[in-house]
Image (tube, rainbow, N blue to C red; front, side, top):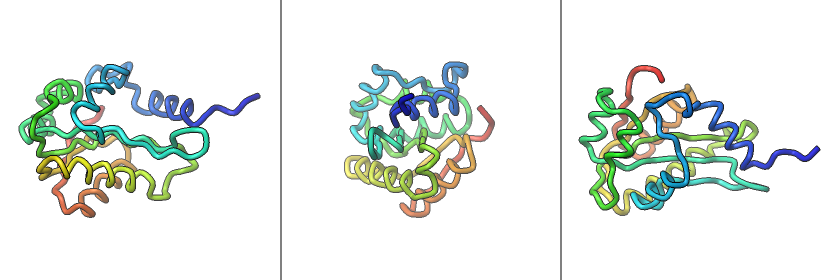
Length: 162
C-alpha cells in the first residue's frame, strides 16, 4: 500500500483542522481564491517543501487597517475580510490566516521561518504596521506571538471561537 504524499496529507490536515466546509465565516481556499490572493501579493501563500511535497503551508492576507479593525471587532467575517481586500491597495496590516504543518515537522521552527520570509516580502511593498489573527490553537497563538516579537509589530487578536 502506497504511503500518502505530503500534499495529500496537507490537504487532509487542513480540511480536518479548519473544517471550512462547515463554517461559512471562514475563507474556503480554492483555485479562484488562490489566484486572487496571488494578485493581492505573491507572498500571501508560502510553503516549505521536503521530499515529495509541502510540509508547511502559510497563508497571510495583507489588508488595510480599517479591515483589520472591523475583523478584530467581529463585525466582518474572514470571508468578508478577503472580499474587501482588493489587489492594488496600500496594505497596513497582515492577517495571519493559517499555518499548517505536518505532525513530524512541528516544533522545528519551520512555520516561523516561512512566515517571517513571507512577511518580509510583503513589507518591502507595503507599510505594514500591525499583525492580527483569529486563534485556532495554542500553536497558532505561539506562532503569532513569535512573529510579533521578532518583527517588532503589535499583535491583535479576534476574540470568540470558530
